[in-house]
Image 1 (cartoon, rainbow, N blue to C red):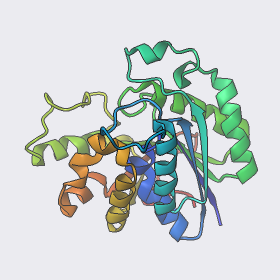
Image 2 (image 1 turned 180 degrees about the horizontal axis):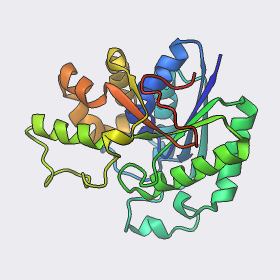
Image 3 (image 1 turned 30 degrees about the horizontal axis):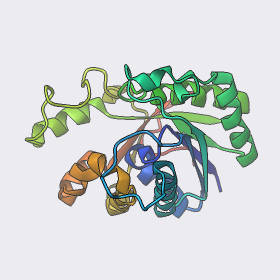
Image 4 (image 1 turned 30 degrees about the vertical axis):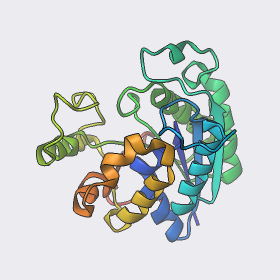
Length: 257
């Protein structure tokens, strides 16, 4: 049995880029640990969704726990740093926000988990955080440093395939580079830089169920929940990773689990 630790910024981030990989690893008998950096207490949610006296933080914790169960996670850890908000927002100035936390301090917290779990593989984001969100960028720096401190044998950036995104824009009439919420020129990484691709197309309904678990985020997930299964599979049926350590041999079909 190997141990996979996936480090993410917010509750719900785990679904998109590592949801199928976590479930695949769990089904194959490996131990899966999910760590999220922030508490998810920032963000919009549907009106009248929360119960009387229930906070958004409490609801998002429950939603993440349900998603983790669906995705086969054996241990869930939430660091509960405040969300830093999108780049350029007032939340960026909060000294306690994750983007402003000392990297060494946060990395040591993650490294302690990596050592305790005897992790074989840790995943985090690329240096642009996929699309430039301050919390995602912080996950990259903290995750990379934690792997160094812990001496974790294998570290990978879970990345978006920029070239595939362009192809998706061509087949979805509602998307265009002009209307896209991300800058396609800086989003993710080129396909040539990807070292591992995990085919999770057979787990697409499990990923959809994990999306449904995050009811407060229906504004973000709604368009995906309405997609026909073949479109959802085209968008999320492959999960891509780029090696973050110094071992360069190609392993395009598997993680070292």
